[in-house]
Image (cartoon, helix red, strand yellow):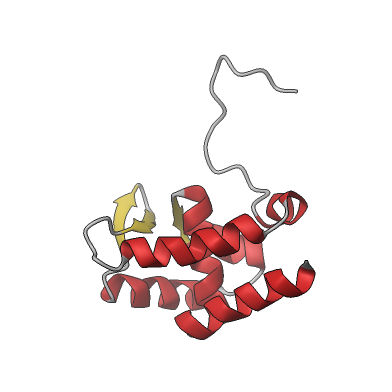
Length: 120
């Protein structure tokens, strides 16, 4: 199983150019929207490296961004014709990752808990 997951992630790296690009797209796929500092913190890589990739994807019209407070938040551009094939590739890789690995990779809570939701 690990070899299949590794192969799919290597495939993404080959398509998107590098590991940072693949990590960014998987994070946006999981969270819906995210800022550079969060990705850099989750993967322990430099924020400038993440920003460079985010800007590259925005220039390619794959991502769009908006400013919320002082943070620049990135998300998929729903108007690009390339969105569906990119999301299909990401979905294949995402669904092949075990729940334990997902919990390890995407452990940070990015949205506040609903007031009525119990903390268990």
